[in-house]
Image (cartoon, rainbow, N blue to C red; front, side, top):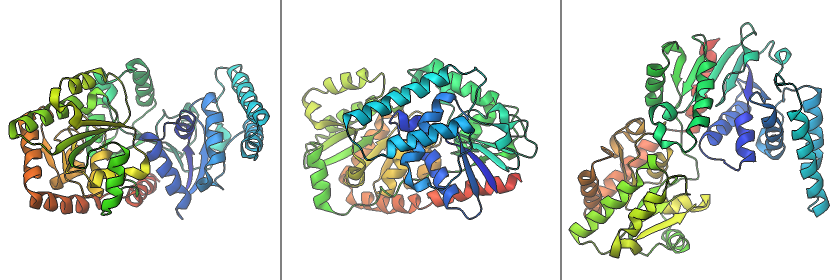
Length: 424
């Protein structure tokens, strides 16, 4: 199968140093296409002229994707050649850095002067291809005119339309979402990362063909494993100023949708009611938006303030130890397109308490405790049971590991390829 794969979102993520979530999924698809014997992939940049430079730079630095043809015209080939010569040159001098910066700006300025209809994707490059796949952005108009070309897009969630209050830049997100939906026809194929997202999409976009909307579940990285090295766990706790006591972990971007204030209030209520003196709450993850109320709740904890540890960003190499060392992982999010953190925790053998909403039940299954995201009493009781019953924690730990085995990037990749084959 000849597959044209749009790497615009990889360039955008590379340039913005945002390499989580959608970026990781798009990258896994690229890796899968590269390694598959069934696929003959071609890369392109179809989103915007600006994403062209970023995508080219991404490819220059990504050694795992060497050898895949990049569809482009003479102008784009010239950019690639010159950027590669600059970026790959082993020269850390100030003059070289300045020259590279000037060249990037000159390219960006040149692109901005082009006709508004300019696109880095050419119809001539699409002839004879079987599949066009965008892992995020709208399907480009150039792909509509190509007879026999099957068009695919990956959809992650419908948060902008279902929960608009959870976005800091709603207008921009809605613009992207509406462009995606507007580019779809009943003949197109949609890959959804969960059954919940598939159901939401079909309920919201009535003109899609349900037989062409397919679920391909995500997976957790191999970075996440059951860490039994107590010394590594101790050193990780020391690094992030976590007391050498038991702790509850919640890991996510600090933002309203993650329902972190609920975790804080439940923790404080539990500790006070049960008079627990050796349990801490660890809130890991970077600041997102509208997080002031979270820190207000922490400040309102009074004497318990010092038992709530905010780590900020956690390095990748520390995540397995941080997850594995936790008494439980608590994730009462209001809505998830998939919900990778609970799966990561389960892969580390950590008992999971999460919401019974959106995609989370299909991720944790019977291995996790599922609660209404507003149920404070239920959350307090669930944490307390794990705190006082080590046999329950061991039982849930084993179930977590087994549940996590149901998800893998190999299965995800093969599901994507099977969808391609089904379309032909």
